[in-house]
Image (cartoon, rainbow, N blue to C red; front, side):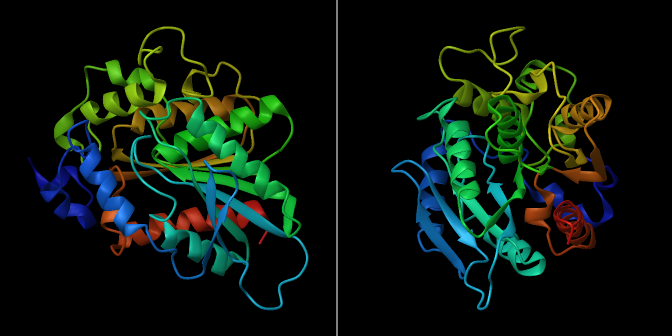
Length: 306
C-alpha cells in the first residue's frame, strides 16, 4: 500500500489496524475501557440523571460564574457498542475552558445489550436534563459527537425537532455514522480504511438496530436510528460536518451535508484529504489533527456567539 494515500501527517496510519471491534473483541475492549474510565477526569463532576443515564459535567467549577451560559451535550463514539463518557474528556474540558460554557458528556447504554431506541432515548434524557439546569441558557444548547456519537447527535436533532420540546441551536457532527445502508456497499476500497472497517460497521449497525431490524434493507429502519434515511431534514439546527477522504463514512457524510443544505439547513462541511476514521484521536498532535480540533472548537464558538 502506498503511503501517499494518507495525509502527509498521517503516514503512521499504515501501522494501524483496518478494523477495531467485532463480537470476539467486544468483551475485552469493554473491560479495558471500563478500567480506564473508572475515575472522573480532572474538572469533571459526575451526575446520575437516572439509574441508566449519567453525565460528566465540565465548566461548573470555575469561581465567580453566575447567570445562564451556553452548553454542549457531547455524545461519545464507539460504533454503538463500546466507549464511555470519559474517553473525550480532554476535548470536553478544552471546550468548557476556552468557550466558558458548560459541557455534559453523556453515558448512554450500549448495544447489543440495549439496542435502538435505548441509546438515543438516553441521549434525549441527558438533553432534557441539561435544558432544565438553572445555569444553562436554553437558547444556546449545542449537541455534538464523533462517529457513532455523531450519528446519535444527528438522530437526537431529528428527535428533538419532532417532539418540539427542546430546540438545540447547533449540531457538531464529527465523521458521523449516519447510514445503515453503507453496510451493503460492495465498492469500498478497504486498503485506505483504518480503525473502522465494513465488517465493524455491519456489527455496529446489527447490534444497534437489534434482532428485529436488518441493516441495509430498503425499509423498516426508522429515521432517528439511521438519520440518513430521514426524508425531511427541514427545521433542523445548523450543522458542522467533518470527515476524511479515507473514512468509511465519507460518502454518507457528504451526502447528508448536501441534503441539509438543500433543505435550507446551514451546514459547514470540512473534508480532510487522506484522513482516516478517528485520525484526530490517534494523531491529535500532528498539524492536521490540531487543525481539525481547532475547526471543531471554532464552529462551536460561532454557534454560541462567543
